[in-house]
Length: 342
Ligand SMILES: N[C@@H](CCC(=O)N[C@@H](CS)C(=O)NCC(=O)O)C(=O)O
Image 1 (cartoon, rainbow, N blue to C red):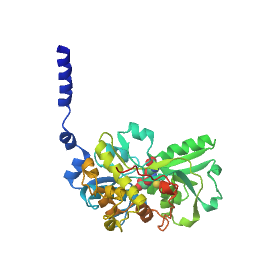
Image 2: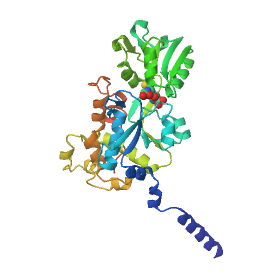
Image 3: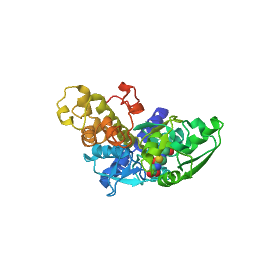
Image 4: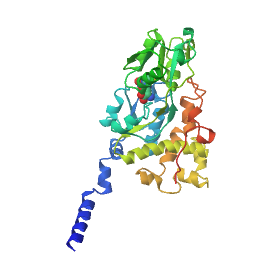
């Protein structure tokens, strides 16, 4: 009897020791964001197609749109977001310290970052890989011809580490010149300081636009690494991570279901159960996340589905001119796939 009583007491004290759900939520990122009235989003210092400010300070890009979509889901207003430009080196400290609520900064999801830096990666909004760019008149057509090359790149990136692995595996010599600011790396390459510029493939196309004569440079065909780029949040706030991940998935699900920013009003009358759940007509999916039930509707209406976001920022009709490739929907042979909303 005594033992039973003790066991009951210890279960009871455990239950009492756990703060109620509302109290747990009080210090949550969602509550902080709601109280502040806007989302604080960490982005790059300027990478066309991903996060790039114009002269008036308006940011555009695929990463910028992810944050706008989260703001639309939380506040019903995609404009309720401020952007903090971060160098590659600064980005993890900024999320750890609470300076930003999310980093959407062409950041590679790697095991070390996910497990040792106090951050959680929750989705991949752009599947990429590392490549090299050289001046066409160098006469090099493959990375296997880069023995002895000097490479310009950014500090604090996976790029430096991959280059080391690749040249070692190929038994080739190289010298790396790494800069804290991306613009310094581009300027150094542009002035002939390095034989090659190396970074994520998408960023090569973006940075080539900044060169004096973009047409005088070619991107070599090899991809030497996997760079799944995605948003990261502070470790330990699962609800906030869920919101960020599911907002991305909602944009992918919308593309899968043929829901666009243009037809979304008419889609509200759809009897397709998947569309109805996505748009918050059936179920309590928003409520489960702690945000309004029209969360996904607002994200897609104000920012677009994944295909619209991709095409607008980096797609074939933009200066970057990138094909969907790995970022096509899984139904088209790509890797973009949304778990079911049900
Ligand atoms: N995906 C890689 C590279 C990310 C990175 O910082 N790339 C540079 C080179 S293009 C960049 O975005 N620079 C833009 C900036 O710092 O504003 C990583 O996560 O380490």
